Length: 271
Image (cartoon, rainbow, N blue to C red; front, side, top):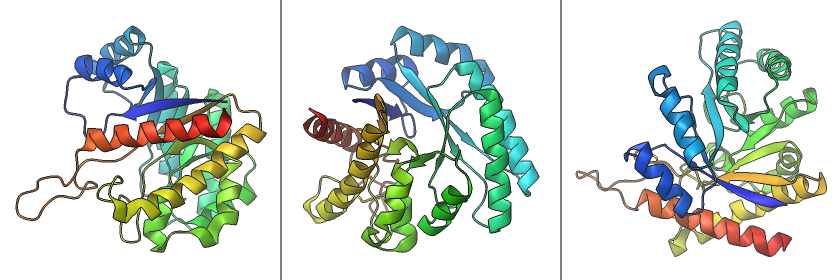
């Protein structure tokens, strides 16, 4: 099995023409970001092609009702198809949906993604249906076709603990995982201030145990290529000093640190 590293554009201020080339030099083989605006679409496609970068598209459903979220999902997924992404990561539905509404959304989403012909990884994200491990487990049990983007940092924040007591659910998720977001959460937030700091190593190592379960499940299933994005975010995910708004860590550095660390761990695990 091979690991592909994707780089998100969240918090990237440099022009794409500069940033994409630098990302290739740093070892990334793809870009993960939302769908570009219509007037930037050709430029985006050309730069992906010029740098031989893959693409993971992000979509974000919206609306007041289940039907509106489903319609939002359909429209964005159909547009995503024009970019031929490797995978689509979806922030889907709302955390206020009832179990019946959540199942309705995902049943229709799975039907639509099958019709469109794109693999969709529904993210375990705060504010969305899959914000909690037990809700996610119930949806996986109800829907065989539901696939995931696993970002366990959200669950650590929501549950206010390192979720070793949810390892059975993590194993269940691992069998459905299409993609990993390798951000590290802690008990009071979805992103540790600096993952290189010794005081957060137990959080880093806990997340790595969960990512290993995903990799092992993918290897067992015969997956040839696993994908990972070191999705640390800018302020206000990234902590800042009071009164000055100065970030306490350098975003690009911690993303690259995480990418290198996980690539090295992957090689050791599957050499």
